Length: 109
Image (cartoon, rainbow, N blue to C red):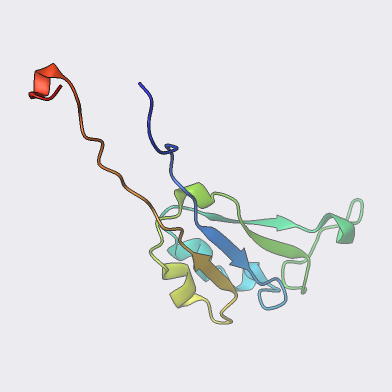
């Protein structure tokens, strides 16, 4: 069966302003409120030193990422709770086309 439109879901574009969100472990509000677990925090490898722990309270040691944007439902809870307005979400337009069946079984020829 061939489809007239490309099938599949378009994912939202989630941007995190790293200049505003400098210490994600102190805040953690977007991590806690997201029902789909879209966000995660990773450490910055350039600042990492061998056999030394990284302090999560120091600016720039850890970075917030939106890794699972395919799970985002666009509820905007993360935007509402972010105290520094570092998160932006752009939801794509979803096109829906009704496929009209053709054939003798539906009375059309």
